[in-house]
Image (cartoon, rainbow, N blue to C red; front, side, top):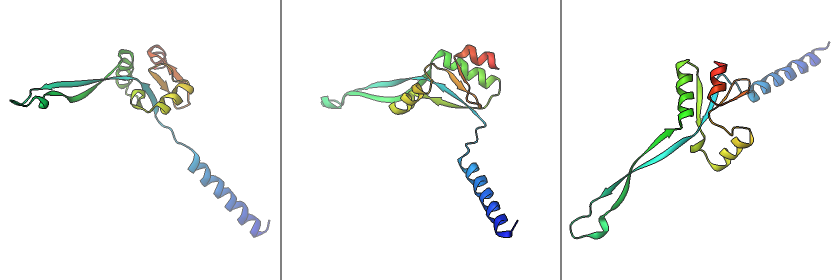
Length: 129
């Protein structure tokens, strides 16, 4: 084989090799999809003496609570020392939640394994581990 053909094949193989690794998404963790509830903490402010418009309500902070089944899944996976990405669907935009519904994440908790298998519900997650 002539040198120019060897050089062409080597550069073609190198380009394919590089493009494979640039486009390949390495997944070494699992994704756990959950929902949470946001509760605003509100306090009443006392008006200043003689000035009625200074009274009112103001936000003191926001507390997030996971639903019981979701919290049980989080504690179970942490107890088994499993590394996972926690994705709260309640925090996401409408389009992201719609995309999650279309891809089959319609029940929480949903654990997506490395090989793209979906485990829906705490019972399936416990069976797997």
